[in-house]
Image (tube, rainbow, N blue to C red):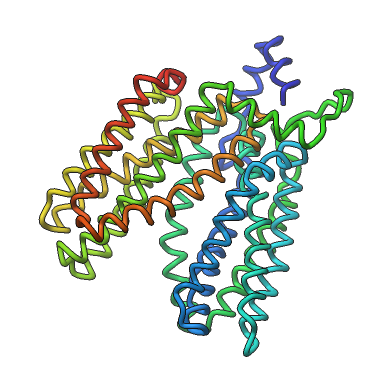
Amino acid sequence: MLELAKNADANPSHAQQQNSAAPSIWRNRSFMLVFSSYSLSLLGNTFHSIALNLWVLQTTGSAKLMSVVLITHLVISMLFGSFAGTIADRTDRRTLMWVTDIVRFVLVAAIAVLIFLPNVPFIYVVLLTGLVAFAGVFRTPAFQASLIEIVGKEQLTKAVGAISISDNIIRISGFALGGIAVAAFGGAFAIAIDAATFLLSGILLLLAGKFPYAAVRDDAKSKTSFKEDLTAGFRYVWHDPFAKGVIILLPLVMFFFLSTFMLIQVMAVQVWQAKPFVFGLMEACIPLGYVIGSILIMRFDTRLKSRGKWIIGSMILMGPVFIAISLLSSAAVALPLILLVGFLFSFSTTIIFIALRVAIDPAMQGRVFGLIGALTSVAPPVGLAVFSTFSDIYGPAVIIAISGAAMLFIGLLAYSRMKSIREFN
């Protein structure tokens, strides 16, 4: 990719021809197959999550043991994110993705068999779940870093927007369908569906063929060790102002947003005493707002200027909206503001993921996304633990208001201090 970039700089007309010839994402065969692969595996994961949690509760009756499965995922993501990102930058990313899908197919199929059998020791399921999480850690940075190799810079906005929309729609429908599948056929069946989706996902990646804009590897370049590449990734993030800013800002957004939304749910039940129908609408508002935001980002694409200001500005605006929600006395009245929060969250995160692929050296993207994945996987659970503890003491409304004030302060601080993000266009 570096070699391609140099050639493009040396020959601008060639670069313009390449960009103008870039097909729409919907006509890009590789993207459509990889997009379908991602959507399938995500759908299977929602089935797996519901089925595994229900199996643990039905088998052991222990919420603590159910949390062991979640903690296993978090610890593995935190410990091996940068390691996996380095692997993604040293190998063919498409190969890494389909291999991990096949590995997860075998492991999840084994979990389905164990759950189907009676009197299976819980530790076996935990160990296999840990291995599934370990394989997934490798796939995530490979997928994130390969997107620019699949669609090129010209179609990045539309590709990231399409993935964001698919992500939200599948998470909503997947959990609902997963619950129906578990109720109708049992947990083993739902987990078997997850295994099948990984197999199909791997097959689709094989059919995708070589990515159109895949990096050209320079065989004459001296080989570096894994340790040198791992260290280079941390050094790159430390010295690149944009990468460092995103590494700080994105986990903070996840920390405050997800934790605060959890408290809004608590407030809906404890304070507003929302009816189930209204509570369901509230749950749908965040993903709906996110989808609307992603569609607008895709629609305006190159006409959306000063993207860095949109990133930070949306974070700043979320603060006062959270404060306003904390002052309301009804869940129904809060629905438009919750929808607005989802919309703003889309602008503060979707544009960041687009900007990362444009601003970061493609050869380093696996390591950057690996580190981001490690930090963003830890931030929400820590936030949930902290916020829920203080909510029990002071009430959800107070903590929501404090969280909104903190987001406002951090957003203003980012605007004044993070010039590399603020001025990104």
